[in-house]
Image (cartoon, each protein chain N blue to C red):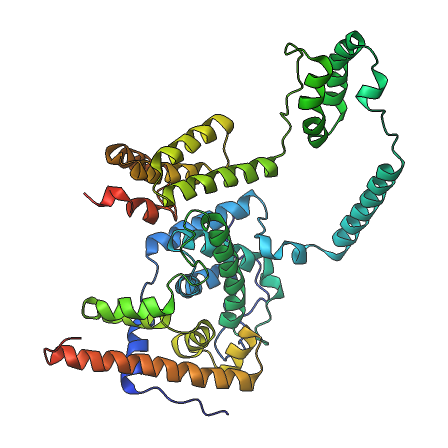
Length: 235
Length: 204
């Protein structure tokens, strides 16, 4: 098996000529060197793929032990914690219910998890009091990953609308996105989707303006090609 | 600013497994191997816009792991390629996760599907520079064969070294090199035929 076929002269020449194609410029080399140096100066930066292997053995043991004891404590608490009586079982008359709702909301907002908050508040409170004036606890504690998932879902809907050439719907969804996420985590994607949505709606001039803004804000974005290839390239 | 490479593994220059002189520290390695890292990240399909970040990550890992590098066991290229292969994999995954929702019709695993690549290449073959030919042809190859050809014929590693990088048995590596060269030769021959046709003034 140890006789790999030899390439002919032409193939060898192709390899020889292309071997050092696309070499980095001095400028790029210096820039990367400077970035590496400054990251090292800021402290050890560990790229994600090899973080755990780099830690000394005793650190791994300590972290493992801490994680195990935390998991045990959490499990014990989950099994033994006292269950509060349901709100409707404690409150008997409508007046009592109305008075206790605000107190209950305060207790909940101080102690319950965001998931519990969302589960208990809206329908239970309104049906119990029958009054629209009751203050509801706001589900402000949605954690970051849930919020990110919502952002992704909404942008995926925008993308579907763009693909079915429904520019109006795409723009409506983007307005919803802007209202819903004051500090979005997918700003770059939202901006790119904005250009494509404007294209789908036939608003080429606006798309061109948005595209310019996109390119100046994220000049090295992998989405640039997609933005540049949109309707703004057609004229 | 911290200087790269103030922790050489030994005080004197060490002769590596390949017989070449091993660099004394990450700083020397950066000076001598930055182009190697750059072009291989590119050939491992790291998106153009992420190349600088990926190269940066490679050298951060190099800096952290320099103490574990033993030049008696592997050439520095073998060791470095192992690192950059993992970093490139990470960047490809990140790119795919981040952008696949926006461009669902694109296959991020295989940035340029092979059939399409060859057709597109054949279409503008005349305008292609000689230096681009190699990479355009490599884009048309099966991934495993492509990597083997890059390691042995482009980067001029020995077959046992390439086998170590790819975690292959040496015989398997020789077999893969054989098939990789056959495929590459076929592609070159196809273009050669086309080149002759163009030279004769016929349709490509």
